[in-house]
Structure formats: C-alpha cells, structure tokens
Length: 186
Image (cartoon, rainbow, N blue to C red; front, side, top):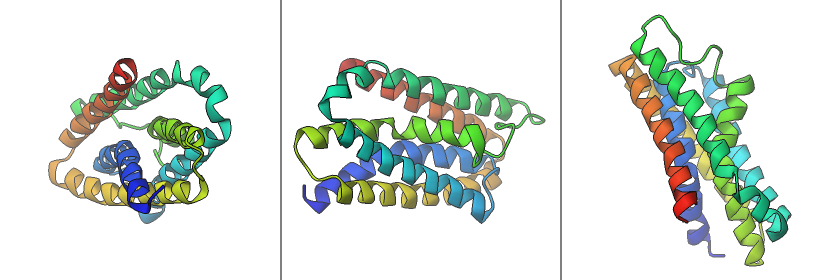
C-alpha cells in the first residue's frame, strides 16, 4: 500500500481520537505535559495495536466483531459525553471524577476511538497487505493529531470555560452516533 494512501487512512482513523482529545482538552483535566502525553500516547498506541490485531485476526473473526463493535463505541462515547455535558451545565461538577489520562476512563476512551482501526487491519489482511509500516504510521499520526487537539482544547477551555465541556460532550455523542450510522448503513 502506498505511503500517501496509508497517511490518508491514518488521518481518517485519527479523527475520533482528535475530537475526543479536543473535548478532553477543554475540561482542563489534561493541562500538564504528562497527562497530555499519556492521552496522546494511549490513543496512538491503541490505534497501532488495534490495526495490528485486526490484521492478525484475519477474516475469520471479522463477522463476530463487526456485529457489535459499533455498539461498544457508541456506549463508551455516550457515557463520557453525557458526563461532560452534565459537568458543563453544573459549575460544581467535574466531567471526569478522576484524571481522564489514567485508569478506566483512559481505557474507555482509547478503545472507543480505536475500534475502527480493527476493521482497517482486517481489511489489510484480506488484501494481503503488510501491516507493520501502516500500523506504525496510523499510531504516529494519531499521537500527533491527539497532541495537537489537546493543546487546542486547553486553549479553548481557557477562553470559553465550562461551555466547551457541553460542546465536547455533544461532539463525543455525535462521534458515537456517526460510528453507529456508518455501521448500520455500511
């Protein structure tokens, strides 16, 4: 597969992680360098790993996973999105009870934003494409775009405060709905 094609696939796959990073950034919970790095690293790592796992799984498992992967992404993104919206309307409530760059919230966000990469890996296996270079590119692009989004989200959060949490929550729910519609219509 040509580099430019892989790059466009990587950009497309990283858009969910970009949007989630933008939303998380607006909450100011990931304002220090180590939190930003953890989030961006995990989003990139999960994209890399899910692409590779999809390739390894091959077409035998595709039918089993395709039946419910969109439901998992929808539920995880809606849970986080609703928490962000609730927090945006209540100045005393936090979107995340803990740092979103640690623990269960980090895992939920990482899985929810990387499920599509599993399907891409499956597709590459069916096309008999090598996987190491595309997986590395996908992971690196996701890391870079997530880092950029966290930086931008922090700036927007400072400017607009809690209202950005409402917008971020709506974006997460929108991503979940888009994933669902894409799988139902596709």
